[in-house]
Image 1 (cartoon, rainbow, N blue to C red):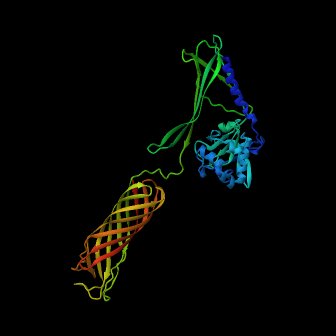
Image 2: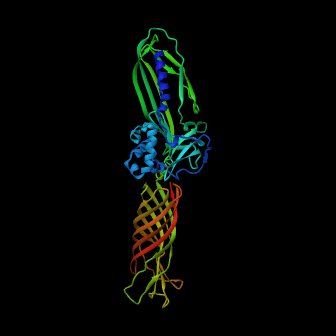
Image 3: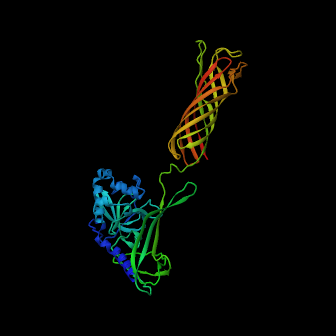
Length: 489
């Protein structure tokens, strides 16, 4: 048992003093203790030091961070910046620089606001300023950063937003943002045991988990837990306990602030439970780190299935041409037009549904109808209104929020009411006698959605009517220009 405790003590001590192997020649790691830090409150990102590692370039996971750090395009497009980044890696303990960088060397965390340290920036060359870090525009959890830790334990940060290096100096302000050579001293209480020493197997299991709070579809947040690293090994130790035992320590959670020249005194209380079988010691440790991951791109946050559209505006229509050159026709100006439509949203770019419209088809002619005044123009109402009932399909370019453009094709049947001929304010006995007929349309429009449920739109429509009448077969076009509201649910 004493040998086990001694080995555990040596392992902790060796890990604690491993930092001394780091070489910190860059000015990122050098501080002038007589200089007062500048209070940094500007937004990050004005002078990115390592642009290929910025969050806006899509670097959102450790895997993408490693990919960008080893991408030949990063070295090609950012020669000066990449050379500085690679040199920092070598000074942190990576012998071959970026080539030795692995996912387990990168940690995603937050630096507390108010942390004092050196902040990098790029202005023709890489430089550093001594700041109290409190930038605008960061989240409530602090300043998001990638912590890069070398094989010997040395580390520095690359901030998410700007891709700039950062190295903390004041642990009292920064908490986990501190990076200093520290000495750990571990001491354990030796258990009083009896019996002759003997060789026993020690089964060691260490599991590191990462839990992420992410956007959920039906809930505000969802939790994803994944195993990041697992150590499972079996070794032999010389033990003096009389019976097989399970060694464990009392669970304790504590937070300590480590400053320069700090000695961390760790006292471990181990307990042994005697077991008859199996004759194996077991040591199990589980550790979980929690992070938040929320996507900036909210294109898929709207999951509405139906849309109701209400439009209104003015419509112009074509006029018939007569074979008789003594008879003439002309436009009757703009007429009221409106439409109500309901459609099923299949995905963000296509939907289909049914629509009903109110359109007046009118024109003027100088035909001598019974009861009309000579040398005057008659107002002919082919339909007041025409009511096209149509099926339509609509293709959309753009996301569910903000601006989008769309194109629609429709076809159906038009119903006719109110056909008549008016001359000088008098309704003549002669009527066009218009009957219902087939209709088809083509529409282009733009829309802007303020929320997933509500938006406004404008459109230009071309509607074809193939209607028969007593006097002639009408083949007229209506050109409605409308604006309206969109409701989704």
